[in-house]
Length: 306
Image 1: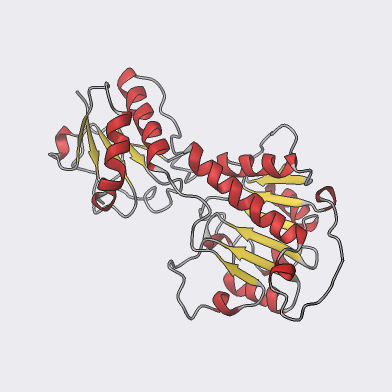
Image 2: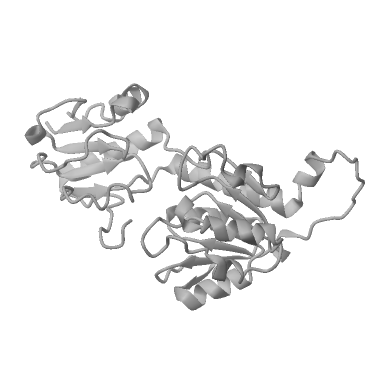
C-alpha cells in the first residue's frame, strides 16, 4: 500500500474530501504525517513547510498542486521526479479569464461602464478578425486560450521558445519570431513560465515593438514584464492598457503604481486556480501510474525549468 503524504497542512481540510474520493478503492494510505523513509509520494505546494526532500529516500514523485514550479524546481535536495499540475478546471478558468478580458478590450466595454460625462459615442469596434492577438507561451494554458480566441475569429499568433505546431494557430519561435508576433499584435497575452530566459521578456525594447495602443494581458507570471518599462510605455500612451493578474510581490503592495494608474487593471491572481475536485483526480492518476510503472503525467524538465 503506497503512502501518500499531503505536505501542505494549510490546505488539508480543503483537499481532504476530494483526495479521499479520488483515492477510493486504490489502496492508498493518505496521511499528513509520516516517517520520511516510508513515504512513496508527496503532494506538494511551494507554501509547504517541507523544504528538504533528502530524507524521503523512497519517494517516487513529488506531485505539485501548482502549475508553476519555479519555486521548487531549483531545490538542490529535490532528486525525486517532479510533476506540475495540469488541471482541466484550471485550464478552463484561465481560458475564461483570457477570453473575457480580450473581449472587454476589443469591444471597448470600459468606456460604456464608466461614463460619468454621459458621452454618446456610437463608434463601433472592429470585428475580431481585424484584431490580431499574440499568445506568448504555447503550453497547455496558452494553447487552450489561443484556440478559444481563434474560435471567435481573432487572428492568433502563438510564440514559444521552442518550435510548436498547433492546428489553426500560426506558431513562431525564437527571437525573430517574437519580434514578428509583437509587431503585429493589438492584444498580447503572456502565459509563459518564469525562467531565467523569460524574466523581463517584455522589456522596453520589446514593448516598443508593439503597435501604438496595444493591450497587454498578463495572467501568467509577474516577472515576465519589466514593470518600470511597462509603466513608462503606459505613461507615454504607447501601450493602451495593461490588465495584470500576477505580480512580482503578492499581494500587490498598496502603494504600487499599478493600483492608481488609469491604464492598468489589477486582478488579484484569480485568472485560474487549482480546483480540489479536478486536481485530486490528476494526483490520483499519477499515483496509479507510478504504481503501475507507467510514465507520469506532466513531468517537469529540470533543465528547462517547467
